[in-house]
Image 1 (tube, rainbow, N blue to C red):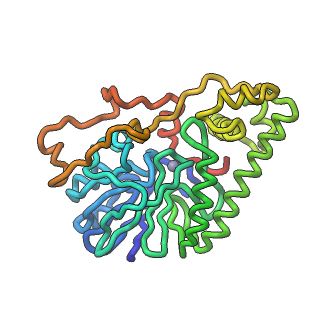
Image 2: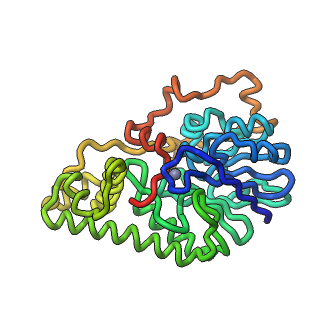
Image 3: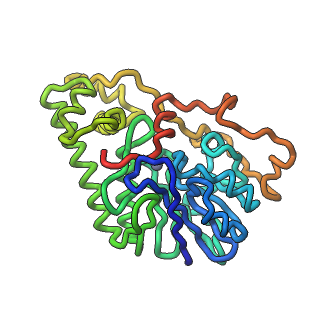
Length: 324
Ligand SMILES: [Zn+2]
């Protein structure tokens, strides 16, 4: 399947300063991760039929609304994440997708593969033997997995899943195409587990405050990114405590640990992801029928259904950071 990579200048903490958007398929292409309006994308919008993103960080979604409206394209969103998607992009989705489903791309389709961890809604798109992986992986360095929305256990599972899929290449959101997916997945797995070992060692050495654990677990200069590294430490502590959902129970089972993590907010989650929750029906019919019918847009303000914790809001502003 034809995959074209379009690096876009965007405000991102990634060392490249760019996010790669991808055009998948020739005519009636699927546009993935349009990070910002861009003249190089504009030249191809007449052959774009759909728009989708790997996750909702600002440096991956900034061009979704402009590109979709200019191309009159179908806007796709992960099922159960519609409100968060609308908050992040400023546009309502037309259709939703789930794990294993296909999204039209040219003469074929990409297949959705859930890869949470960096962000809870994170997905990858399989295109024949290749995989568009967003911020799951990078050729060099690492990606942040920071609390409250990042989940280290999920991230490790996603890396192992992709390694087992054995794709030919990875097309990441930042940096060059990954030609050796297996070794890169294994390097990223080692990096996260090594960081976790440093965090655990810091706890066992008697550190109890996150700031103290941070100082003990990192050797490098964290000037300017200390908050982000702190989120990473919190995410590792969540995993060491048995996961965010059961954190209190785990603390009860391990009274000797007593690490102070401060007030915790649950990450935003799709309310309809709960087992037994009523199934939402994806919009049917012509593109954006709801908007054409006058349905009000969900904006960044005034949406009572969207509750983004302050820390997560900060994360959305900074997007994706490497090296934690
Ligand atoms: Zn990201």
